Length: 422
Image 1 (cartoon, one colour):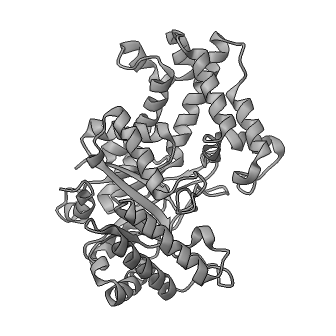
Image 2 (cartoon, rainbow, N blue to C red; image 1 turned 90 degrees about the vertical axis):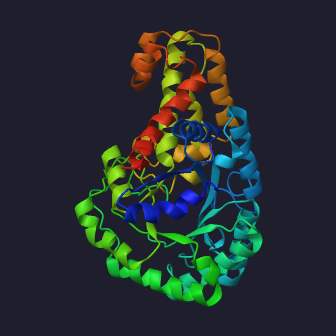
Image 3 (cartoon, rainbow, N blue to C red; image 1 turned 30 degrees about the vertical axis):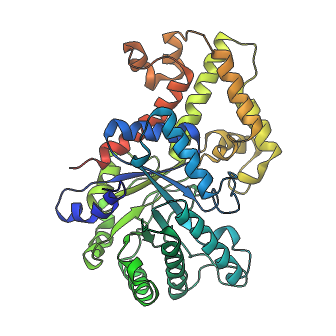
């Protein structure tokens, strides 16, 4: 059985009143991926790792990786820690013209087709088709019929490139703001039932016309369940407000919902999402936020034990000020308020900077300062308190890399429990 066959069973498990979920880890950070693989191994489940269209594409994306490069990168981590390659499910998120939306539609779609071809050839078997954005000269959001037509074209291209292992597809585009909202939040309205049914119908019609075999592998539709996070706020899932949306699944045979931006949801809310028909839970910034907390905690420990070195927060501040493109349009307020957001916002846009040479050097310098140093338990308690009991009991070594991975796994454990069969 292919690991991604779990995706095909999600609707059947819900219909049988034994819902099963899967965590979709959206990150290109080595330690986050290691944490995800270690957690999947502990749970004896496949590991679903996803890359986004801006992050990884045939032109390199902002990581500099093509889909084939990303696969090699993930498999290299798997090999290093002993996770079986056959346990991996690789996914592509928001695959469509978004990276090239400033071009005319014909050019942007040609590039999107080339991108999904590269994903499929590299063996990615879960593909979210997203052609919801207008291109040069178009409205911000094209009509549903245009979106569906472009999505079907992408599905057909993916099937042609994939070979024997045909991919599963996700449709639908009503998602929370990528990376989190930019304003204060206190409430969200779930997708209207009429809207999701209209999206379903227009995609079904177009797929059956131009890509009928692909339609049989459309397993989920993306909607807004009423979850989101901003810089300092989290909107928690409210099942009562999503009841009408959930009932639409009865009119969409074979499909479940995919929930984006589930970061920072309490475990009970995640379990509620899985129970109600949102078994694919995407998480990204929440994982790198936990990693950043651990890095800054270790930095504070190093400042006590080896005060001769510089601080990581200062190095990251210098880097982000020198290269503001990934945060400036997202973080409002006074200079002092922006500084807080650069480091501590839940949207965690600092995650874009960890691959930079200056950031890597700063982290390497921190690890060197702590190399061979016995970290006293009181400093774990002070700066990494959630990990204290495990270090005290001897189940977790007080080693920097292990502590960073464990901090990320703590988040993933919440997802694993929420996704476990009821």
